[in-house]
Image 1 (cartoon, one colour):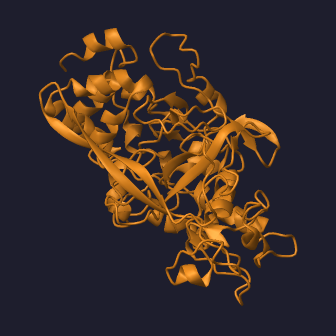
Image 2: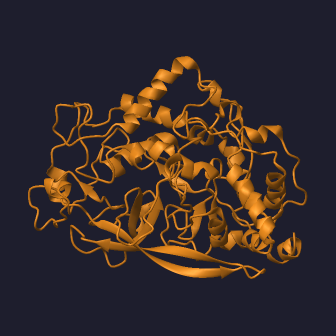
Image 3: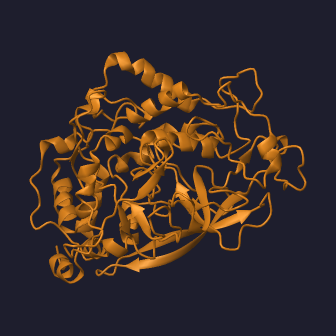
Length: 477
């Protein structure tokens, strides 16, 4: 473990003074709700301890998340109202099998299972982002127009009776190399947005944009069940302990309670709970109005979009509360796979290095969920998500320059690591970080900067074999 402790003394933020003893509970990341990964290599499965009488409701929610929406009006009036502008026809089109999305690694393929968030400098009345005035707070790259279905991309000025697609999103990739102390080199890639065929004219001159990969959704209900006080206890906004780590809670607007609350979900922790997370995705990604987000994703500049037929029911929603609750319930009860080979000697060596290098300072291993009388199978579970759910400044290398509520342009929520090594088996995605730039755990670690600089440099100082051991541990989670 060459140089680790000397470097940590200089850099701060590294390591535990002692490595915690192995806990047998580590093999069950979702507590008694953990499931065997095989033979079904999926993340969209119910918790193992979910009462059998509740499983029909779970599978009804899964069906609703899986089945595609169609253009309104349609004979299928319970499933119409798609768009008029959208990014996907169904929730699980981006979260395939409950897993992560992916971004194209070549420059000739459009982005399909990631989104581009947009804003301009400043804050709205609730201290959130100011949406780009023409295109809103994210691009919608699909349209119900016949022209788009035939793979044409006319602008709004040439398509007067149907809504024009907002844009086509492609990526350009730049490369840089990183050299370890032992002289081994790896290549790092970084995406740059290549926005083509803007449908409604130019973007605002000060537009801030950010590519966001669709995250895996397993274990979401267990993350929601963590006491906020336990997350708050890990925060150290002013780095009072001088360890170089200053995790912060994002304060976000809750559209249901009309209050400011702690954010927990999303790449920058901009959603307070699963209900708002799911409802926002329906509205912004599929164009489906619902009680929390009753408006279509059409701006005032998109006149045809705003006037286009919708699939609203008598209450004014395309997705009524009862159906929204079904999909929220589905997300809330998703399982996490059991650990694989957690007691193997190589994995145990990697575990020690994970702690000693400082990774566990932000990737908090363990929580105990709250006592929830209405959800006993989610209550008092010892879980191992490896995240503190806090915002951390990750430095200029990972910065998108786009603030969101109290999150700065270089802050990101610590992503959970459970199930990370199974992403590719779930749906083929092997891309990590908020924009999918990293294709391996190793690349993701090397991109860490800012508050994670100490841990990153401690990892870089390890021998090749030690780095491999730490990576194998992360992939076993």
